[in-house]
Length: 220
Image 1 (spheres, rainbow, N blue to C red):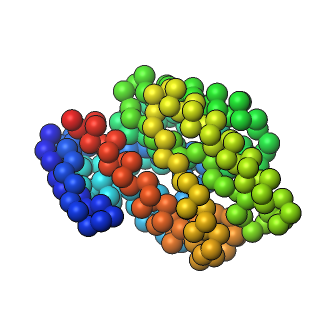
Image 2 (image 1 turned 60 degrees about the vertical axis):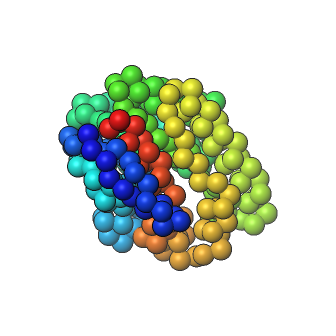
């Protein structure tokens, strides 16, 4: 194990332990995990976060298992594949399709819990990105946006509680990110639903501290 400095948002270097063996980094979940909406593969969450890990001194092997349209019940299969290949650090991005498909928070949270617990039992560090606020999506009629936002928040809270119970960590987007996406149309791709390359850059910037901290715990 060695240590490497990485910059934070204030420009101050933070010293993190780094893994000398390849860090097996897996991204699981839905279309956001797969990078739908980005114009280049290098702009996806997995690739952007891998660059941050490399900059911090880690050697990284990235595998992306996210599938467009996936719901929480798809995580069982994705986790099985990831475990078969080996995983040290897992990022799970899930929930938007559960919301769109009216999956109950209790059901989706239980499925997420089981996926996180399975990864944790195998020795992986797990970071969960809960469901986004779908109330800001342009295709949602204005009269329903407040209701959809409330449902999104309720679902994300159930996910967060389940992930923590299972031994994972949560990287919640928060209202600031939703407000930024609502105010900056360029953060959405042409379909006005998925992030653009610029949108993925914003999301990755928010996730990077969580990913770097988890990798440091593995190296410690």
